[in-house]
Length: 132
Image 1 (tube, one colour):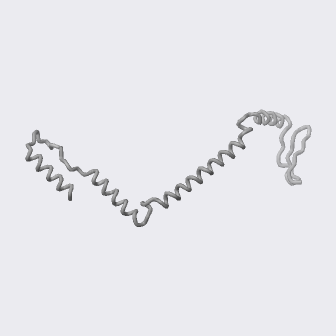
Image 2: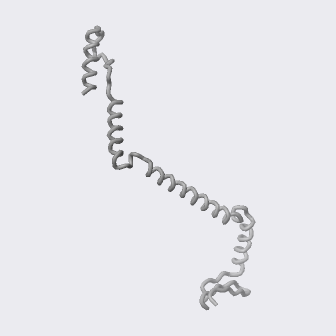
Image 3: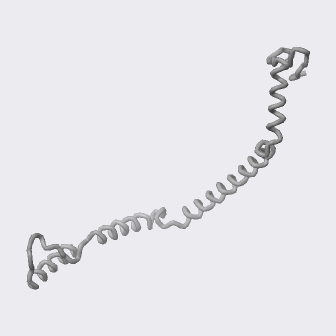
């Protein structure tokens, strides 16, 4: 006999290994029992076990799919490849530099008007800087 309860006119006592471990007065136990019965008829508590299992099942499925996708990506991504990775990173850096590079200088820098020769001279200088 490991775990059992006894009921008397004063209350309920729980015994574990022949030793009393918990005592609840009868009036308190009746109130707790009525609360328990009210809770048991609520949909949330009736369906909780099923919902939890369904939620755990769904989470496990999604986690498995994520792992499969991560594996597929790590196999197919060039950036993770030892040979192609550094080349792709360098190419991206070069593209960023080119994006920030100005080929045509449209700023007047305080000059009110500019003649065609001055404009052409500034554009040639700007292209030379971009070429470097």
